[in-house]
Length: 91
Image 1 (tube, rainbow, N blue to C red):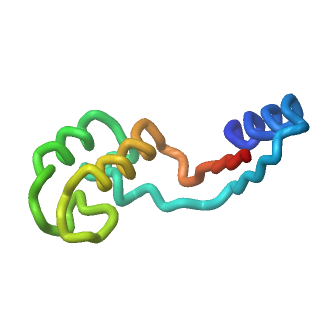
Image 2: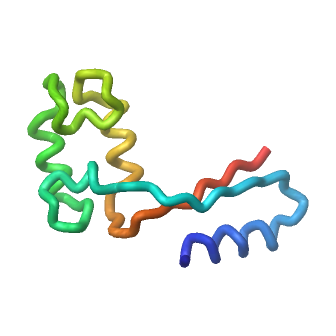
């Protein structure tokens, strides 16, 4: 909800911008590696311990290796507890 309000405020402030946004449900549980309900430093430590290895744990994009693209996905989810996100695209 708070993200939706921020996006709406941005769009109202910058009405001339050619922007689109989506508010979609996203399951972030795959990034909660220790399953405590928060994606935090403990999960980052778990991710760091498998970085550079092969296998499913920590391989969020499914390419068979825990690498930088997986870290990018993890970083986007870091600090969240909510199950949705808002994407804004402006030309």
